[in-house]
Image 1: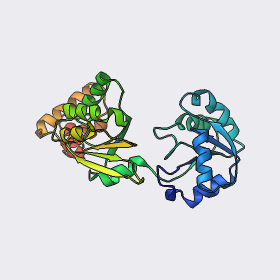
Image 2 (image 1 turned 120 degrees about the vertical axis):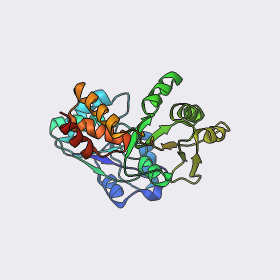
Image 3 (image 1 turned 90 degrees about the vertical axis):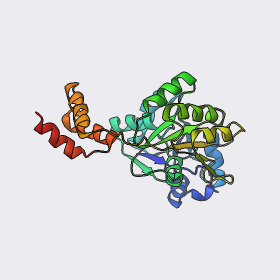
Length: 271
């Protein structure tokens, strides 16, 4: 069995009793950084010293099959340096291999920088998308953000302190300077901080220097103000390009704020 175990993202008090119990009894732990995991075991006063196997971005591809085969008959606890494995951290490749091998996969839920930042951001939480880290290069980053400019859901990004100011400036250029943004820093730690404002306001703050783990939450795009006839034309164009009618209606409804059901009925009537 593969057990994905969420670890604290800063505050050790967030370690669940279930996490501690599993680590106390684990025989094999696949860890993003074995030294970090050793420190975690000591910090949680866990005397057990399981076999630690490194599982990181550089070796997961060739380690996944080996560990998946092992997990058919033995429990393997998987941990990242912080938070939930496989979410912008090593683990996805192993889970996919384990599923293919017929091994059971489960998880110990726990701290999540993504969900915590969303919850405290003040942005809509009913629909959101996690985009991970933006590209390092300015041109690729700008292109990615332009593609997301009409995304109606709240968007969540990870970013490094050294690139935060540049990324915020690119967000302002792609999304417009009236888009609300929340920068969440050092979540659950002593110097936890949330800065809210427009891109321009936050760039000025970030350029002075920011430290720590960063999560950026961005308001989704406002629905486009289009008429029902124009929306129907968009649906018909999508269908003509090969999109299923139901999917086309859902896509246009998401972008315009119109009813997907009404668009579907109108499209059927127009045939």
